[in-house]
Image (cartoon, rainbow, N blue to C red; front, top):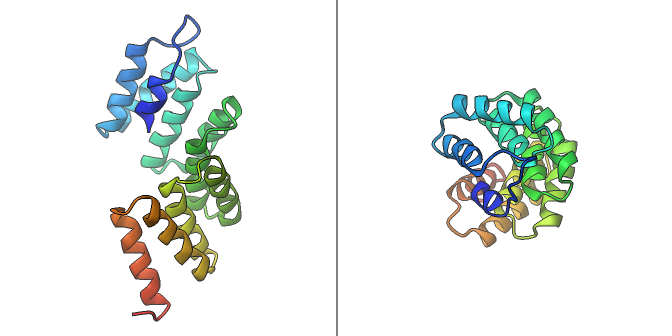
Length: 169
């Protein structure tokens, strides 16, 4: 998903160079989160309106379980692009990790409204709905994730666990 963002990114003198952005994304994709965090922080300091850098920074913070920092970075990314489904998904995931399940649900539903076939958002919504005790809705959400991504192993696992808990062996 991040590579799609860079491919559609306009480079000019108010943005970091494409090489800097590619380096940032490469560190993230190679799970070199300390380097990715350092680069993203540097870019957001020099180019505070560069939305992709805020988005990557938030994703790094999520991976490093720095949830309060992820929340701030996601909100900054959302200010810069209020129609970014990935940011709404990441914000929903962050809020989920912070135990703010109602807010998580709202943001995940916004991600889905912007990108109706967003399997990961349906998956995250299923986890949130389960935490809210809405098991039937969680089941539907996991099944929808599988509809859009038929080989989604985590969704199969969570659906199976949920069905077992519901007594549907």
